[in-house]
Length: 356
Image 1 (tube, rainbow, N blue to C red):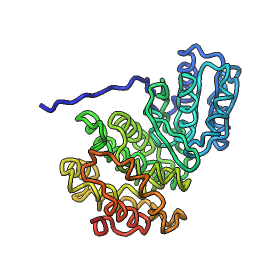
Image 2: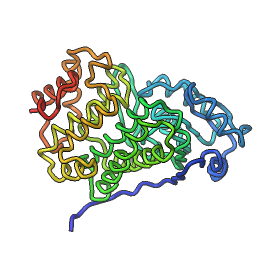
Image 3: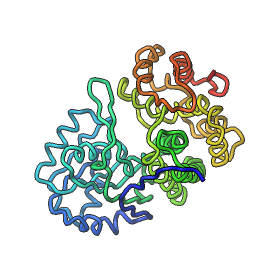
């Protein structure tokens, strides 16, 4: 028997098509909330107001100034609007959830989250803030949403390119859970099943954005991905992407989707059991090639250069990433090896051939 510690995270999950419109009132009522801070980006405001119609009189304030990577000034503005409220309700993607978490971090207010993407942040106690082009993250039980309402119908209008990027971001959570610092047999089992659901849902959503069954598969996979990541923690892949996002304001999901095959290629030989299980869940003999083929099929940008990143970016971030690289990464992270990984991810070359 393997000895391990598994910290099951508290939280209520309500999952199913239509549940946001039929069940959100009950979830809000469970907290006895009378003054609610609604957090929703401009693009999600109409949907959020529709969902909140049954308790519109309890929305004390609405914060719509959501920005990726949660700049400190955004967090401070949202916190100011939270004064006098007793619940934070967030409707939207990972940046929206992240903004709600920034409020909860300093106020202790409970969060009810209604995701509209496949970010997974809604089931993790991880928060992130960006200041002066540096993103810092932490873990705090106060930021873990108390209730998450997963409604696949809310993802039907998410454009295919964003659905794909967000779903592959969830895939990154699953893959990394196999070697993250707090990995254990439970989180690995959850991650493996998450990969299977994501692998089934991603191509189907790309082929037909209105396929509700495929959207349900994808959302279930994203929930499992976030759950595995929340317990196992973040590893090299997320350290790279968080530094890049903070330094260059890159789109979060697309950055994760591009970088993932390169980190997998870097670690695979040093983590043979993880490599085998990831390959099985992907339905591919070679997990790196399987991920690369999936990304190509889904139209993921070939390299970070397609996001507008300059070629010498590695020189700017190399030391920051090295300082954050986990000591127990399956393969030692040296400056030379990390530099090669970053250059290959920028160019979009074949990770199986370019990662030394």
